[in-house]
Image 1 (cartoon, rainbow, N blue to C red):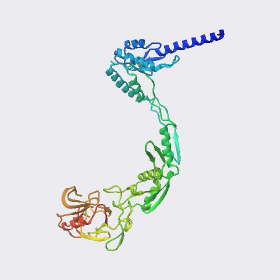
Image 2 (cartoon, rainbow, N blue to C red; image 1 turned 120 degrees about the vertical axis):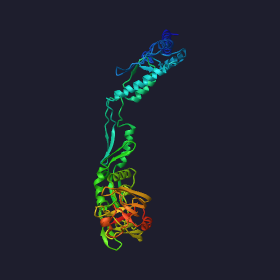
Image 3 (cartoon, rainbow, N blue to C red; image 1 turned 45 degrees about the vertical axis):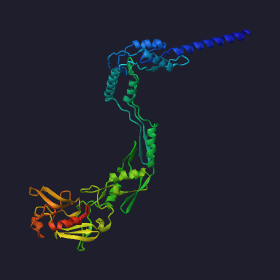
Length: 459
């Protein structure tokens, strides 16, 4: 063998030996910057590291940002001989082929750890971090808004609010460190590139250039998204500012709604009159509800929505009554007609008179007149006791067999067994407290001739 060849083989052998020695050392010793439970074990073998760990007491002190935030009671480390295998496993976990200066924080749970002291420490530290956060600034996530057919992304803002969830996890994982130095984990805002923000963008883009038709009785009104929605956001569900559409809903109400308006009504005698504008049998569109209905319809890709879910009214039901009714100028053909002048009531079903009777209305001389206008039967009850206070201040409690109220203030149809004056002029000086008194013999048939929510036209 030539001399050059022998030198090369010798050099190679030396390299192999050195690499072998290096691997052996790496496999049996911790790297320089490694700690186990906060104890520096760099350069030690498993046995040496175990002895150091088992002889180092745990202070249970906790530091954050260089300041001690918890002073714990010193406890024994709690290692037993059974834990030597755990230390060996930790050593194996950090092995690298070549020496490494990378910092590694490893954890080994001692078999006889003081779990109560650790639990008290975690609880106290979590509470302390919550207190510290009270004076700290929370981050502001990126925000996505929709406006004028365009999706806008507002940049996030960082804060110095501690991330309690991450710190609590670190506490659990390092609860047996000899001294706890918490990392400075700040709560991070969601950025424009996050999956959450991208999902919000996609959801709001559904509004771009969307159109919808609003059905109000027999009329249709067409809207673009930017005519309905001033601004929209999405965070799992849609939220809309729909004040933009309010002026249009106001115009629709002026054109079609019946709240505060008089009805044209043809009396039993065939005379056409205009009712008083007072009354509770009416409806109008609630602008906020309408905006939400339209906005949701736009998001859902609907071509048309109906105003019937957006109504409001007066009286016992706040939903509004008479929407979609076209007969008899919106009053329909089932109703009660009451003439104060004639002191008489007529009861109609499907356009036919089914009963009529004399009544005594509210006492005119005391200003307790039965109110004129278009009301409705709020509900019906048998065997009720009517309670209230007369105009003169005297309380009353009157048992009746049949009770059909039509105003929130307590006016309605009922039998009046106590009444003796049934003159057609009785209401002027000897009338009721506002109700329509009926003969006991008439009250039952009248009760059966009425139904809840039907209009009561008083003129």
